[in-house]
Image (cartoon, rainbow, N blue to C red; front, side):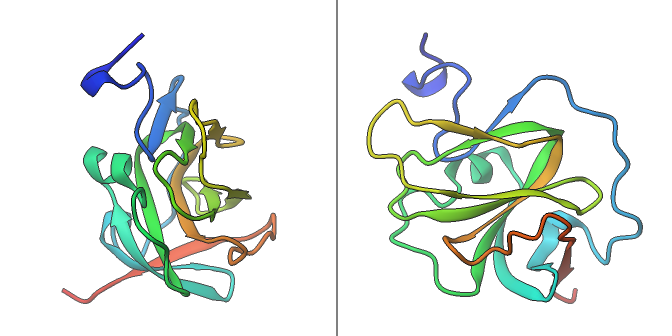
Length: 156
């Protein structure tokens, strides 16, 4: 079945797919700034300068079509609501690490995703309801299951 723009129904190009109902979970206590304004994200002692994908169009596009991602850079996805979200690697030219992050900022899991080379592209799902995703160059995200994410924003 085809959906919007001739894509299979329920799929987002190189981006996010929301399945199921959102879980009611509390958010981070007193974040330094709104997550959609983040310019840097930390997990433990490591930090990435990020481009934020907070709108549906930004989340759909993600890093698709880019030639690569410089060291120390990433894409920070602020999802519309907590849930079991799915990402795919359509139109990606390089492998990435993806960190699934709960509304409380806990890293729920990290996985390395290779570019999709043949359709249909597999969809990779969050292991539990998440509100954020950090994408960075493959091999750079810590695999610490007890990791905690936080973010900073540029001054106003």
